[in-house]
Amino acid sequence: MYIYLGGNTVISTKDILGIFDMDTSTVNKATRDYLSKAEKDKKTVYVNFELPKSFIVCKDKIYICPLNTSTLLKRVQAGQKR
Image 1 (cartoon, helix red, strand yellow):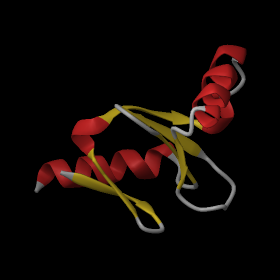
Image 2 (cartoon, one colour; image 1 turned 180 degrees about the vertical axis):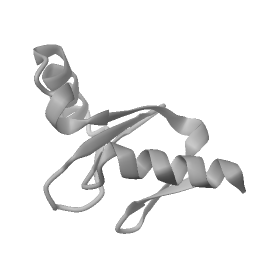
Image 3 (cartoon, rainbow, N blue to C red; image 1 turned 135 degrees about the vertical axis):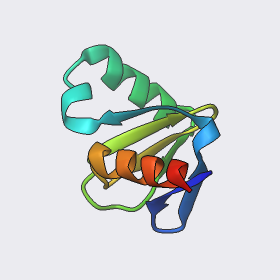
Image 4 (cartoon, rainbow, N blue to C red; image 1 turned 90 degrees about the vertical axis):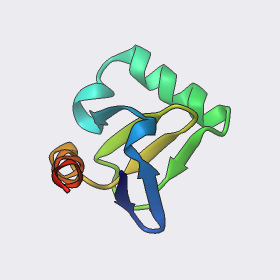
């Protein structure tokens, strides 16, 4: 199954390792360092340039997304019902 993140970005749910809220997760310095390193290594993909609300960690990339984690969860659950 696939999930639409916005813009031209669609990812496979099989690749998703975790979906995280940007506000609560980036309070921790280790998370900020992880995201900074991923950006330096060119492993981040910005879905668009709106205010990021979540990030999705996949096997090989991190997607910075303007959607809330609850919206992403609903999309995953809706796809599982099909």
